[in-house]
Length: 303
Length: 271
Image 1 (tube, chains in turn green, orange):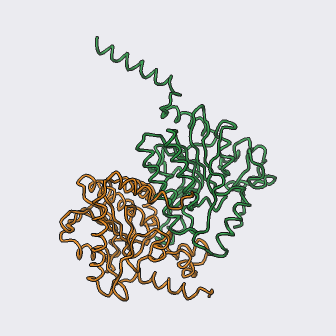
Image 2: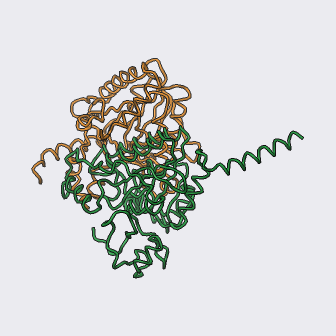
Image 3: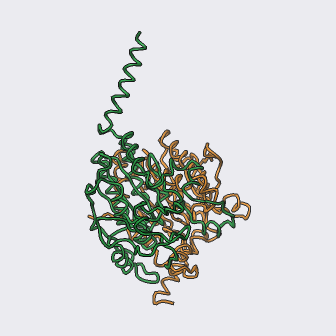
């Protein structure tokens, strides 16, 4: 589909050749012509209006984790055309095109990494690969990531960017909602923290499954997040939608997410959350302070 | 029309049967199958959604918990039931009922019949996606057998929001899809007129889904469809529900939960 304005930005990444060309950049929101180097330094946030450009998964991961710490798993898992689906072109062709365009085999990357001294499992969706849609292979990789977090007792971070379930895989795609949710149910029962970051856009069956089942839900400013799309809602109900409908800020005012986090603040927020929710001893200073307070209180009560 | 135009037309006739206005709806089955049914109302949070109904019912010597999607027959009832498209309150009522089913150890019978969750501004404001997602987990973890039967339309996440369980049965002429054919055609072809091709491509009929290994049993309907003989359709549904429930009730609950997890875990698994 033709896009008049640039939404993606390429940032320094261990992988070459990903992202769109960066010699001409126009902000999708304020129309300002942006200097690529300056935009990159600003982590893909428009330095004029604060618009958060979409990021590819490798760039997003590289931006967050300690350099060289990301150990990608399942990179070779790729979508299969089980149904023999064909719309304006066969799904098998679409898969090949997406692989060529993105240099990735699926709409999600996952692996273990280190962030602020904490080991964690990080799962990151990539909107550039078929709109980040969730098919069977996508759901398989996400579930593998969740199960790794469970088996190794590691905190989980999932970064979502998706149009929802992948039409071309029919019911096999829909059932990935149940699969990922069931796995997260087990993770939750084991008391392992799960943090979800919703980025632009997160819609449909992804919002209605793993993306919102987190202990803490964060979202990037201005990200569109919802179940049904605004166009579908208007066609179905003829309702006039309020300003900012389905933005991260809208969801925050309705109590659906915990925090809207500007991209530059994300590492510090994640560090704080990993420290607070960690059970691995990384936050021993915290525990000691707490234990000291508890002991002091107890001795006061004894007197 | 493409070479498979005739199969597309055959698939479309299934879609039309699944949506037939005279087709029996959930309450028709409930009244035909269960000796006693007490409808519970409200999600205890905000409101009562008449697109999702439920409550305890007597079924062959036991009490079961019915959780069902209900379309309307008359114009007034369609409006009251929002054409069977639930808001968050419907899914949260479903959550309330499955928790109660666990508490009293009532096996759950979930009857699916919706074109999808309601696409409305209020539904989004009150977290429809959150409500559905939380139900996926609650149904996956409920320590009680769950049999799901698709009566007519199984539409997307809106159907799955009460649709996770140990067995998936489908009435012969029902459909179940990641998106309704019109929505799929609109998204992929940008032309709602391609709905027949979309229906064919989606593999949404009961026999197609059984071939994909997603459906445990296709429940036979009377010739011409369930709308021709409610009694016969309900008898076939009751017999199938009873048989599957009987099998599940004989299974240790921890084993049942492991099998339920594997059931979904194995869909699209890559060895």
